[in-house]
Length: 369
Ligand SMILES: [Mg+2]
Image (tube, rainbow, N blue to C red; front, side):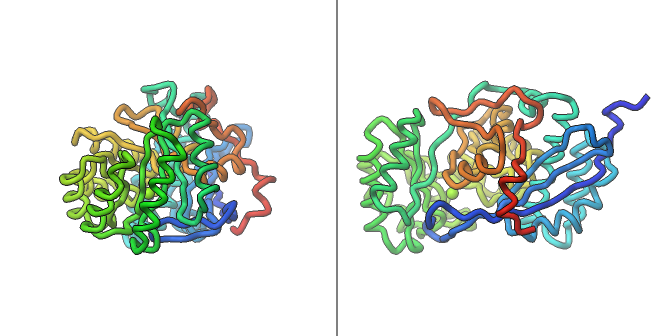
């Protein structure tokens, strides 16, 4: 008798959607007016059975990489043995490079395969792995350098009203050359949220070590508790110096493309950020989270909150998830069942997989691949 344990992945379908931002967005070192989401759907031979859905935020070329390079490795493999598919994908991109585009493509496939497995077993993903908490804390994230004061006040104030007790703004404007404006925006943000909300800043690598030290000294009165990528994450030694010299938490990890990238950072941060849409999906998330735990660190999910919700609920040493403005908006547009933050947290739905349903008709006008 054949059972669901015998099911194989019959096909991966990749598509890409470019969605304009609601207004121009920029951080310390980058500006954008649209975001491209690459979606992977994983199917079995039985059209009556559920489909797994994964995604990443990557150039549309990642969809081609899924079709041409990864799908042939995954097709025909057991739908339950995600680890074997993951190993095969990583082996296949040896010469193309595991990081960057291939890392994002592997991530989208891995998420789709885990979602497929959980749906075939009729279990929510967080229950399949073993949940640690019913509610996952989030922090509001946006505060782009392109915003005027009123936009910034409305966004930060909206999160505080929602009950989110921590918010993050972008600094390091124009590659760290506008410290005057950074300091004014930090002071303004503090006044907009009041004294009871935690204030985080993210320089996206816009400062040098000395600039970051001077900036932290100058904004000390605003009680900032999280300084993300004060210098480039490539400057691991610089991050480490700042971690030693500053009393606020130094955070990085969004460009840890794999376990080894996370290993290089783990001595230099107070909280390790992980992005399952880049690092190799849920499979690599758990390995990186374990590495962080072995160094006495908590982890924080970077962006894509709907994608991270289940894995965050199942990770013991989790601090919080980033409730990133741009991705919250896109995930609500793209998925039925996208989570809503209430009282400072989000809770996984009691539905199979990650519980999200792709709104293909609504996305059609954004489709580029
Ligand atoms: Mg960041």
